[in-house]
Image (cartoon, rainbow, N blue to C red):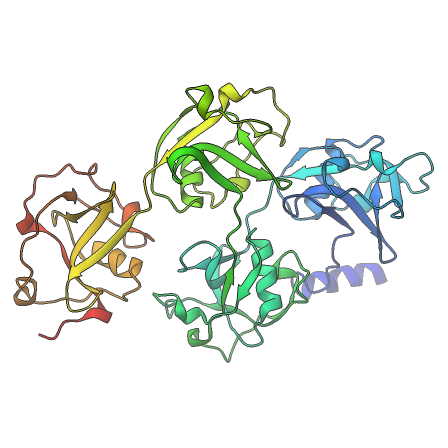
Length: 453
């Protein structure tokens, strides 16, 4: 009866309040869901002997860590540096049926006499999508902090927010070192008044893998969006295109265990190329092909094959793939990717940078946008992308002062939903295809650039 009462109490006090941290972890891997397996006993961490280690055991590890599906049972020796000789090996002959919630529930032998660290077990799980993101910044590793709860994204109050908290955010997002704790108000447009503020008084020690592991207050009553927290992390270079005419075209290489290697063409498609182009801050994916000649082929390691992406992932690491380094590919099958150059736009000939004739950059040339189908939602995306607030109505008199342009007309029939981060994400005719003249050039006025009329 006492045990039953304890269980009822634990579940009634809310999720996470009485949960203990996992007694297992994966170390020295590229993220918290891959690496050499270690288990905790009496405050000390030890390894697991791989005698009998199989996918059912990895399934349990992945479940306990809150990661995705089990992907592999690599040797723990793949993850450098190796375990210290003085570190103990706590268990061997682990035998899970695959349905347990924790590794400690599985049958196992805890007196290890005939194993060495050359037999340490490893595990690979799918990397769970982060529960934190940085928005409105110049790249995915800088911006206003938002956390996810039950499918909804809310902001973080900056009461007590410091570099240790940012360190955890950077780690969870797979970014580089923490660099700053700016106000979230630096990132325009500001959070909508209707968006919730989920947490405040975050208190991390800086070693946690996820922000949800830190102490925090989840009932926010005394914060407004003027106090939203921000974060700046270094951008890690884990993907690159080499051997091409610029940084947005070339042979695809990924960084794993501090070494660069190529990606096999097997299973590669346009959805995966979209992820790469987005991750590099380039424009749309335009071409995927095998390297055509010996001059553009890679050398050395071939890290990935059978990569499968939905096209919506922020990072290639979030896509499914075969085990790193396990494939039968040759460099004749290295993946080549071409993306458009980074999408840029500007407002010219106005009183400020937030008003004027709209121009977009394509193939190194600035050109105008035709006003066929152009309306408030399209202007909303432009003002938001430029960090200029909201679009405003301006009488025809003010618009007429803009002399028709010359040169290229790049876009026509642009159709936005109003929620896009970039005008590039809106539907439009192919670049350069239109039935317009420069008298139909789009002119945009945003709130922070209202002309004196």
